[in-house]
View 1 (cartoon, one colour):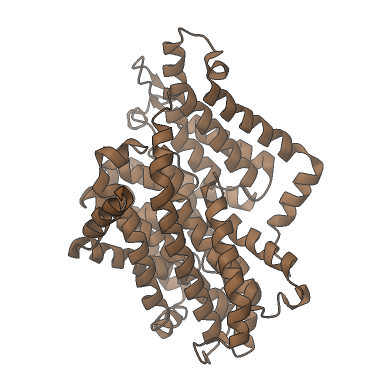
View 2: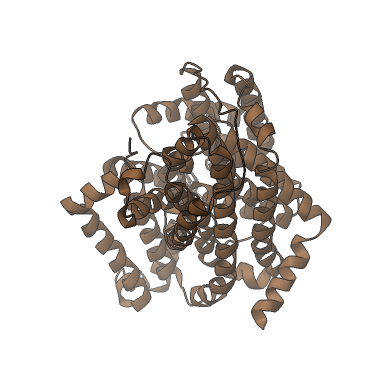
Length: 501
């Protein structure tokens, strides 16, 4: 009964004209970002983060959330029609989605992707509404020691689940933690690592790092590539899948939704890992694995459902524990702190309209995205013909305006440009930027809880293992480290992130 009352509250908040408008705006921007290669949810949300200064908290978060799961829809359009994933999680969609388009089933492929994503998003929204309150009740029992241990587990989980080299991911997280220490120490008031630069005494704003590493660096990486427009599949065909395609797609959608819901909760999981894992699962379960990569509906339906489900499930640890599981959730933490809202279980009690309004808006946003993606496919396809040399100056201008509007300081623009160049070379070295951003966001929170735990225990380091919940979380972190160090697991992990031919 209480759940129904909460959902009613959420719907009453989400259905206001203002919040519906911002949900629609977020969905349109998310689809646009997903369709256009060279962009992504992280730089886009980073660019638009300053806008949340002037928006009400609920409207701002609804818009940013719409951008995030909107990219999951938009990325599938280019993956299917152009063989070009507009978003990272759409890489797997290319494998069978584009083959269906080449076989004259582009319309059916787009419908399967849209319906699968809508189903996954709707189910995951209900799961968030059902499981978030009990998790938040558990989180109220957390003390400083438990929060420190939980964040340690989160960072280790992000390393384990990050694609690419483990040593590089560890180095990026450590670098993020070090960057988080720049600025004035809250306890002693002493400036740390500011090199005598007054602008660094308040620390390095994570939005600046995000825009540099993801926005500016992405522009540099795209500019060095020759524009190679793949021929569009002009014949979309019927949007209605055949009975055979429906029979093969429906079980995959259900399995992808379940898998994405579980993996999305994990730190570093989210949509990318969910999509890869779903494709691997469908291929393992199929009686005709040789059809995968040649236009199998299950190879499209499973990953598309999993990536959308994983994207929305990543809100669970953010809303209940205040722990960002990926780079986008780290930016959502920033959007909350802009409005002096401390992410965590207290959001549900102190800001119920924000908590339940955001959850209700997820279902509304998914419905909007189905309407935006299927009837307006022709419009999104035309956008693919816009040359990148025309797009990148506009992206650069918006990034620069966004950076400057944070503090109205040109020093921030220079800092973003420096991180952009550094981020470009990191990309060349195949070092992911997401672990760095997680370390930067969680670093100050970890330090604060670490010090607070030691103050309460009068300097006794055993407090972290004497408290049962804290010890369990640290034990889980240690087990993760041991498991990922095993040669067989490292091999499987490497294979999971390799794109199949």
